[in-house]
Length: 196
Image (cartoon, rainbow, N blue to C red; front, side, top):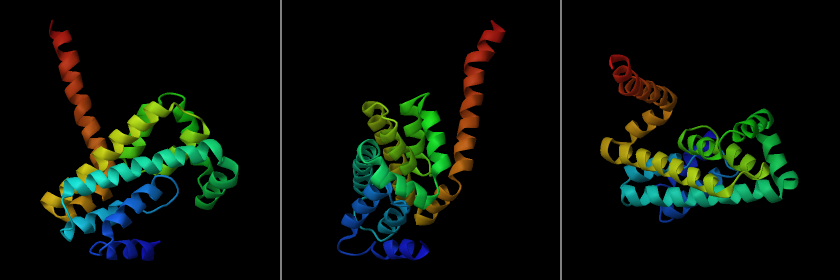
C-alpha cells in the first residue's frame, strides 16, 4: 500500500495527472483504499493547475464514485461488495454503519464524506440498506466538497506540509471545532435565558 501511495505521488507532475486524480477520487469513494489527497496535494505542490479547479475535479469524481458505489451496494452486493468487505475486514463496521443510517442519512453521509474515516464503507452500506438517494447525494456533495476544497486551499496557501498535517490531526481539529461551537451555542442560547 505504501508503494502505491508513492506511485500515485509520482504521477503528480505527469501529463495525465488530472486523469489519475479523477480516477483515484472515483475509486476511493467505492472500493479503493488510498484517498485522492495522496495525489491532490503533490499536484498542487508541483503547480499543476489552479487549486480550486483541482478541488472541483476531485469532488465531482468522488461524488460520481459514491453514486457508483451506492449502485453496487444496491444491486450487486453478494457477488461484488461482500468480497470487498471481507478483503478489508470491515464486516463489523458495515453492520455499525447500517445502524447509524437508521437515524439520519444526510448527517451520516456528510460526516463520512468530510472526515478521513473510510467513506466507501458508508457508500456501499448506503446502497445495501437502500437509504434515500437524494440526502445521500447531497451529504456526499457537501462533505466531499468541503473536504477537498479545504485541503486544496491549505496546500495552495500554506504549502503541502500544512495540508498533510491537517489530515494527520483531523480528528483532533474536528473535536476542537465542535467543542468551541458547543461553547458558543451555550453562551448564545443559555446565558441570555439565565439572565432574563
